[in-house]
Image (cartoon, rainbow, N blue to C red; front, side):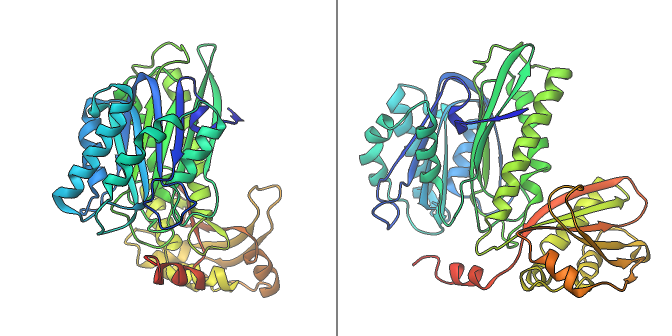
Length: 412
């Protein structure tokens, strides 16, 4: 698998664009995006498990029952959540406006929204800009970049990319973009994500591959413990690569699924790193758990602990908070078998490690060495929970003063 440029426009047959319609207060920021495939796509989506679902989620879930899409239209600056029947009508209108650009069925269009909850969506602004949005589409990186800018809210970094693999001797590309910095917490995708691929693959297999990838990537990130009303990850596959269609299990499916998962992990890590106010990416790795689910529960509990996150910000090797978070996770483990280390760097070869706990008890360690590791922009909390086969990595970030500043005045 090699990295390439182009984002959602890297796969053959996709165009993207974005414009400013006036939803956001800023006079300069784009706020409506569109991704379009000339060819009808197999499509799948994974959505928030929050019982309070935005109108866009409800409409997209309905449209994806058919397993086919040609376009996704997205707005930022307004979540269109908790807006009643008027909100549903506005989301449906967005799909109709996008469909009208291409003379297609509105059910072939998914919709997503992000921004302030509980405020009516100014659909008239989108309607007035829809022709310009259609003209903004292009099949190059500029189109991708315009669409990406239009979906961002409090994001401070781009979270996107594209990769290429080979299936049946054919180059197959996967491209994507995500937005999300706050209200990031399992369980679902905890952000907005849009993925395109020119792989030939059935809707059923695509859905299964996406769910596996999301479970091991976007469902393993946490910023603040709040699961949004608008979370959605949508994938479209138009078959333009010309590979033999993937309709069942086999080597091609396994290869595609591995590539999709690795791509989603990259985007998930970038999302955690860009958590609101965050200064560092914190990876929590649990090994030796009784099974994968147990390891995931333990790792999520540690990564989402406000006290652990605050200690990472303060560069304080307060490892007792880690065991505390494991203890209230509800997962089965033996505290007397737990080992904990702080590790710097992303790879084993370059990592510096300080062990702070062995067998559930303290070890003598250098506070200075531990502080140096905790000061890194990327660090790992490495936990061995026993002798079982379960191993999982979860990605989070530190909790800073700026998180409170950003969310204390979000609407203004």
